[in-house]
Length: 45
Image (cartoon, rainbow, N blue to C red; front, side, top):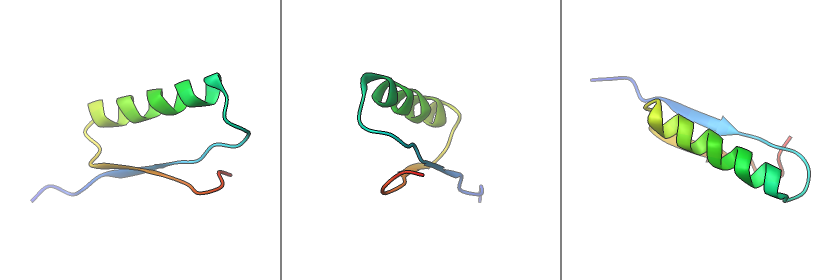
């Protein structure tokens, strides 16, 4: 059985187009690289 791979993303600052785009890029890249789950941090870093 293959080991599960998960990733967590934490950002700081308010919601902006740049933060939203970078989060979408992290998510898309993680899925393409075979991560099983992408978690987001509450309240960022």
